[in-house]
Image 1 (tube, rainbow, N blue to C red):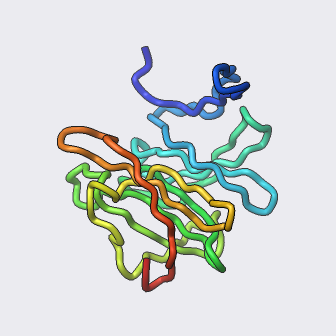
Image 2: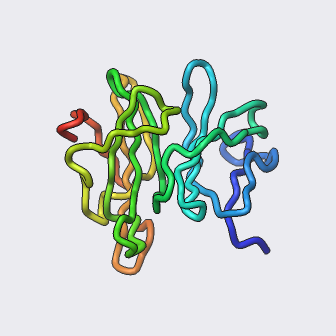
Length: 179
C-alpha cells in the first residue's frame, strides 16, 4: 500500500455513482488538495506538495488525465492547501504556511498577490499572517456565489482533531493592506 497521496480524476455520474478515470498527477512525493483554476483559456492546478518543499504549478494538456509540471510558484516553503484566484485587478495566492519549523499548518493564513497566477514573484500581504487561529486559519476551498462574491471555506481544528469542522466566510475586503 502506498502511503502518499496522488491526484486522481473521478467522474461523478449522479449522487450515488462515480467512475474512477485514473491518475491525473503522480509524483514521488505526497500530493493532495488539488486546487484548479482557469487562466487565459487554460486549466491549471496547484496541488498541495508540502513534501517537495514548494508550491508547484501544473498545466492541463489533455483533460482530465494529463497535467504537466510548469514550475514552482514558491520554493523552500512548508505550505499546504494553496488557492489562487483573481479578485478585482490582482491575482491572490492564499496558503497555510508553517514558517517556524513547528509543523503547524492549521493556524496561519498567508496571502500574496501578483499580476499573473503563473508568476514566480509573489508580493507578501502587509498583514501576514492575516489569520492566526486554528478554528478558521486553514483553507478548505473557494466558492463563488450567484452574485460573484468569493466565499472562503475554512477548516476548523479541534482538540487533537484535524478537520473537525468546516465554516464559510465571504471575502468582503481584499487589498494589499486589508483582509
